[in-house]
Length: 316
Image 1 (cartoon, helix red, strand yellow):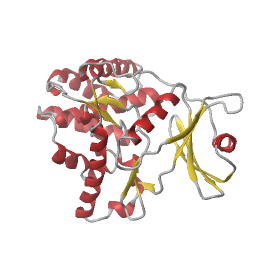
Image 2 (cartoon, helix red, strand yellow):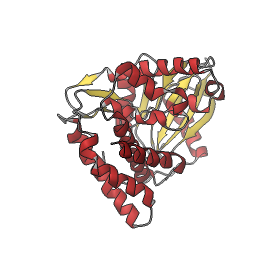
Image 3 (cartoon, one colour):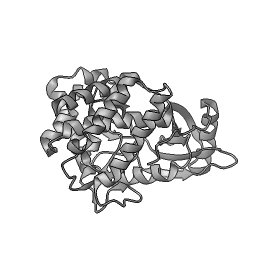
């Protein structure tokens, strides 16, 4: 994966709504309702309802060269998970009429778990049941193996660290540049440097299997229905054949700790000796990578990651 700033294509909500109507008329039929669902640094999504009651989601990609991989990964994950992951219905490259790549996919009804006060306030027993549902579905994905590690479309590495260590080093080197320019806090670079010094210890246990991972499995990408039951996963990012523990570090982000997700997964499926330190390393370096890519430093996510990395280093 390239470690570099990506310039987002300009796209306002009104223009994107108009493009949504154009593309669904072209690919599906006449819509009766189009609703903005939200967006991030490089994506913008709309829910489309048709006269017969069908509903789909159209997503616009505000960065080039994302379309093929997102489509591939969604369909691969959907074929290897016991809960719903939206399958892609159509995809379209940018053209003169619609100047950004986009695709249409199935809609998962419900809401994401991060905004569910009702689920947050459930009993400990019910929250643990939810964790069991989530981790069982995630393990379905992890049960898909490959002979090689790396990107889902072109896995080419015999060992996990042959792929991951150079990638992590790129992140550190770019972080050093940002720090020297006054664009990255000292506490972040100091924690990264200390973690890098312990890299060989933290990753001393060989990763035996190349497992399919979602890549962005946090509480905001876990969907629930009106009964607070798991209804699906959305928005994979950089899915790979990788160390399955790479999929665990985001379980502690946002309100994830409330649901015992990481502890439940480890209790059911086991973990490596230095899993806690690995997850701390993965989390910190991933968040810095996200900052490098988007230019958005999210302190309420970054600060706990730095604190956790320092805590795990002190335990080694």
